[in-house]
Length: 296
Image (cartoon, rainbow, N blue to C red; front, side, top):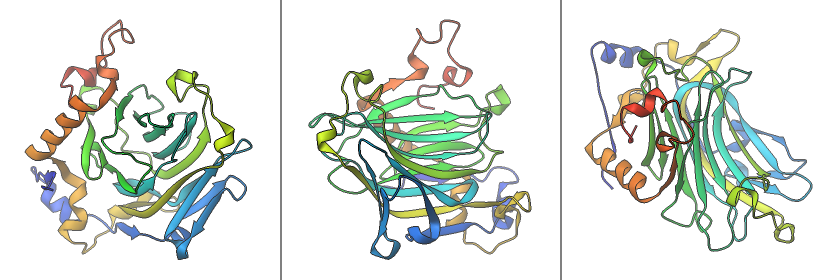
């Protein structure tokens, strides 16, 4: 597979790259990296911290969150979604801050009837405002094997990736009055829960509890990111570090020509909803960020 990214060293950025940061680059031990926060033993860690599973039954779902908060970074997780008839279930993988004006970057996987494709729901919240949904069908069965889902979040853009293929880009357009999530630290969260009032065909298909428990699996969590310290009120990226250029590359990554071609392929062939084309939803005019390009 060709390299999807190049990063641009614009005026003044090279120096910033060289002096920025004691970044966390952690991989692969859930005991060290996350806390299972709810579900009454429905979330489990196996294989010495290498595998985590969440389960859902008619009484409860389950979830976990990262021990660290991050302020910018690249987060990767390999996931294998609920197999079979998963209608009504939602598996999530997202970054979020706290409070009414929170920021959030979402992957949500909406369950299906056996044989139907999963829907990948994405959204970006900034200062408490979301309503920036894009949805996709995947080009593979996400229940048969592990696949890598990634959020690349730097001060210039957010890139959603599946197996290192970009499916969505949300650029920083603060100069045009569009809030961008870059000031609030966020934790990684994941959950498996019942949402049969809306998740599958708008709530028409309900969860079949005879198929329970439903289980999603996780491995190879990696956070190459700036860790936020609430006691200092700053991130580790304010410290001088000798991290390699490769470790720091995410800070200025953008799509190169190959990446833009892959993005167009995904959005032309696999996108099923784009808020930027929903004229009925925005009768007073599309949001500002939609007026630039469909392929944001």
